[in-house]
Length: 516
Image 1 (cartoon, one colour):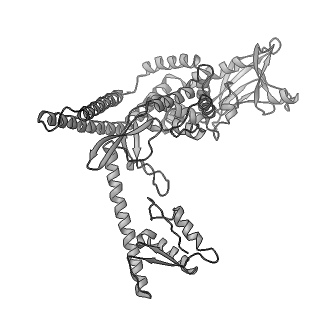
Image 2 (cartoon, rainbow, N blue to C red):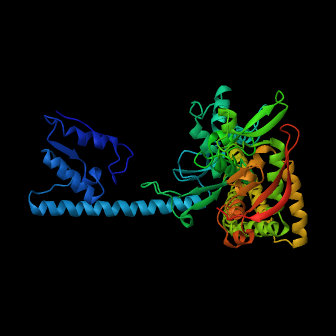
Image 3 (cartoon, rainbow, N blue to C red):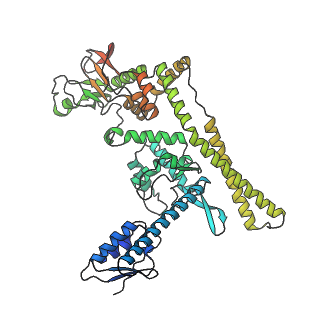
């Protein structure tokens, strides 16, 4: 019997080839369907000498021979040696070819061209230059898809006007319910929505050579090749979304807590029994209380002294304690210094992107000059094709100038350390902003510094890591800033009896509690 196994456009450097595996697997059948595998050359079978021999010997045990129709081999040790030398040469040639191809693709990316992969959602690959038979492409906005990308970010940050900010799952449902489709006509899935929300390309910075295609591992950042693309999402908006996604990550915060509109959900505990407090209401929902969950659900608190306190009272006490202890002038000064340093460290990438944009602008200007020169010399006529090329070049030039202006403005936005007097004004301003902030922003602020709140009859104890301030500001530990922050202090309050359950707390004293 004769069988044909064809694998188009797949590299022979590894065995991740469906048709190849089907051919190998078929030799295990009894009786085996064929005795010989004919190939054009050994390089079509494998371009890895070790893998070549492993598979060849495996086939040999099943009585199947591998024969090249262009490379005749003799039997015996001499033929085996020749075959292995040829396999080694094929492997070396393959690696050399791959090296040259990768170098060409890197240079292509440095010049701002797209290397042929599927464009990110929101973009399309358009012809930019033609070199002989080869057409070079760049990423341009796909207007409809780009608007959908903006919509997804708006839904995540603000909602649709009828609800608050939506999570990834709810955004997916919202889009599908209104008939939004992917470029292939399929419905949205949570994985695609999440990929859109985390794709840095939308900020105008695309990267090539980020991952090793063979292993899937991320390469060191100094091996990445960056190039500029049209901006869909402002970089400040993108970073804000990343912070919110990090806060909502299920491994960090349970979904029921991240979507709750209760400020201290999952943080506050009853001192007597250790159970979480939960939100309850009184007088037909007119009042809201934090109450020991054991008392509310089972009718009794194991410690005997169930916690009950008005929601707004406890929220205000915690926010007041945090703002007075963390948003001090000295710490505000440290925050600005840390952010200024981080911006300065990131300027090298921005400068590289700006240089690439200027290089691309120079190339476009040359193209326009060449077109005008050809028209003036009579080489080209004022035809529809000429006008189309000129319009495309001028449109690209205008887009590049716009991107360059935005990049230059970003580089000029220098943030310098501030004086202590300036820090006093800034810290008071930050406190006022926090007081009027929406609940989701307050929750992120509280959870950045607090890991547990224990509410008792005589005191409320706030606990948190001493390096929380540094982590919240920079996203990574900053030793000097953490040291400046010092230990988190507990807040001790005196309990006063009031009418019914309308009790409240007043400040009494402070004590230092060991950070956790």
